[in-house]
Image (cartoon, rainbow, N blue to C red; front, side, top):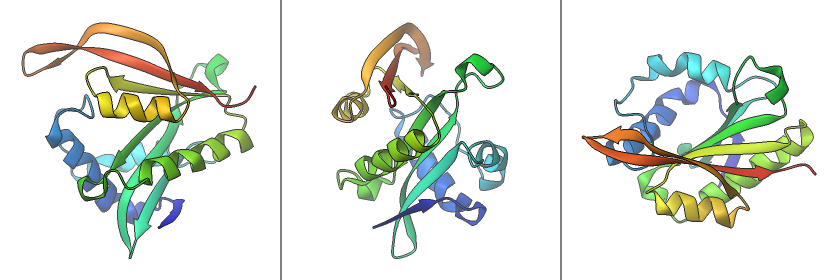
Length: 165
């Protein structure tokens, strides 16, 4: 497996992986799928000097990605805190891809003075919560009944990790 920084030419495959998660319904609060062209602005905002999208690939196929983006963009007091999101293609779950992507993200954060990483998770997504805890994240908060999916309300969990002490 190879991990590298994403390029705009990867956007079709990144969008396909995100759309899998959207259709599954438990991994993201995004409810409608995207066309790759609709994700260009997201890509540009997450692929600057400080913020990055890292991808894992095997045989030129993207198997997963992790994005580090601004937390509360425009509010300078949060400049050393970033939001992390990750998605792994459904055929590649439980193969260590997310772990390797997260380890690359931690190195990037240390090198770029990002002191904290924050992840927003659907509180009923136990596999993501278990993964984040395995990676050293802790529960930093909960927004009760703030997600509405097919008429049902769910909690939104905040997990965080201090990267630089």
